[in-house]
Amino acid sequence: MTPSPLSQFLALAAEAFGDAVRRRIAAALAILALLSLAIVDSCTSCAAGTIMVNGVPVDGSRIFGWTGMVLYGLLGLWTIAISGALASDHLQQALDDGTAQLALARPVGRGVFALARLAGALAVSLGTGCILLAGTAFFLRARYDFALAPAGVAALGTALGAVSIGALAMTASLYLPRLATLAGVFVVVASIAGANVAALSGSELPAVWSALDRYAPPLGTGLALAVVEWSGRELSASPVLVAARLALWAAFAPTLLAFCFRRREV
Amino acid sequence: MAALEWIAVSKRFRSRPALTDFSFALPDGASVGLLGPNGAGKTTALRLALGFCRPDAGVVRLRGAPPEEPSARLGVGYLPERLVLPPRARVRGLLRLHARLAGLAEERATSEIDAVLALTGLAEREHDACGGLSKGLAQRVGFAVALLGAPRLLILDEPTSGLDPLGVRDARDWIQAARERGCSVLVSSHVLSEIERTCDHVVILQSGRVAASGRLDAVLGPGESLEDAFVRLVRPGQAA
Image (cartoon, rainbow over all chains, first blue to last red; front, top):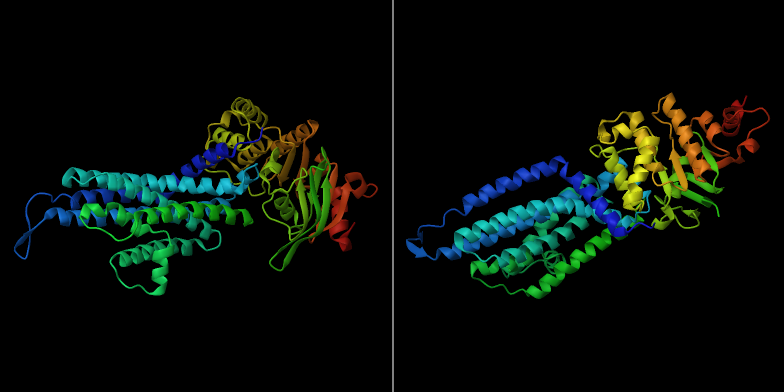
């Protein structure tokens, strides 16, 4: 019987998920997620009372809205970064220890194998991110009555960004040393987010940063657009275009990974 | 159609040639020993056969198709030289994964897994974590993975590595049983006595080139052991 690629993908993804869960970094991420939730709980606990600025009372919802937007955006970016970090050696590790070759001697396509490793890593990072983002959305809803729909849209944007960055990191790991790939993930995510925020604030950007903002996965823009309504402000970027760019990158990056892994000698 | 065929294959790693103009066809149902000193190109030949790397020149055909195509590897059992099992995977769980990758239907998978566990003497270790197994037991698990699903072609790289004398004898029996049901076998090994017992053809590689190949009785001189023939072919100055 010819094996079904879907059945192979699911079996390998479950195996990759198990591998990712058993790594020490997964335990560290779980602890970090719990700590982050405790910090979010603390940061969002000052709902009552009047806020005075220079002796003048200000509308608390604007401050909380702004804080909620920044907090949620940072947690989304953190989820994307850890997705890249986990993916950055999840395929290479299987190649290094020889377990990949045992599976690839079976009638398993290279693309199926690489995408299953990516799915396993993303299941862990996005699972952690889900707990973080859902917990934060819950606090913001319960304490400041924030709408939940923007949080859901931002979570979707985070997932698309995580797929893009995870797949790009895994592709880079086929050519670069482990530490360089890992460092690259954090530098790239921070740079893209910085360029996006600077562009949204109307700053003039040097060419490189402008290119990052316009052509890289719009990680920061997507998150900011999704939750901007909490702050009562408006942003000039087009949500449809930003969503389309996120989706395109989320389709292109795994395709690139599969293509590059097919050409790689194992 | 040959089970496996290298046609004028050359492969270099950076500036170092690993295989040069290597040609050999593994006849269907035959058992071939791939021999050579360290660095002769044996593992490269096996990696090319499984599509792990591509030749710089020449063609490799696995059951008539390029080995990079997943369908060409249907019915291939492989035991690598450097066997690494996922440490926390259970023996049965690992076999179940490979049964799914090999496309075995659920019902057949269960009976095949039971069969290879019994054959390789692992029935009582099926729930053990692979990481806790001794080298010899891990090698038995490697054999169980390779033999799963009654493969039509077995590719074994140093198959008796880590096995005790009983394990070596068992391995010989497993290879023999596979041959009896028509499976082609390619064994790369330094244990010449085992090759002599299990293979009817040999290929002897020296510095990436074929020093000799053919039926075992044609490669051996009159009254010559495989070890003598090996030394004569790869180190002519020291031949007995």
